[in-house]
Length: 219
Image (tube, rainbow, N blue to C red; front, top):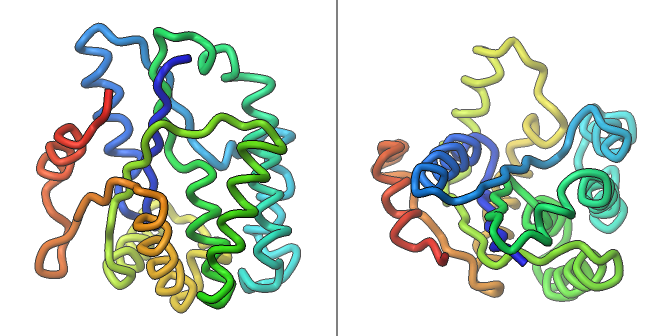
């Protein structure tokens, strides 16, 4: 089995940018790399995720409970795994890099629950996805730590630049704060590598963040 590395973070944290840089860097070293991104929009496995994010089940994240929404995302991953990238995961020479994964459920869905229920939820989540459903567990998770206020500002700018309507997660400021708190808890509990992406209220240079990622990469 090849290495499987996940890059996660709040919306606007630069996950795709850093994933692309890492893929280019490893390819330049002669490594075989496959990149993934979740949710896997516009595929049959992602229909419920798209309906949920569009507000079809309610216009607030909490209108769909943490466990139900988690299963939407888990099925998206299962569908893509079985129809697309399972062969890459089983190839010992391929490094898998993923923009979000089960880790995103650990952040965004735990955010719907009181802190007293986080441990029980995380136990359920990892058991469900990695054991019962049979999805592969990442070898390393790199979490891009961005304060909620900065993340919200970046999402606003992206939405305006792309003329894109925000989904129900992106529209909810309180949800960003709860997600940040859940992320810090999950990172500590699960041993994720936290990369500090902000300094004095602003994003650090992309190159500096990437240098930190390379320094902590386990390959």
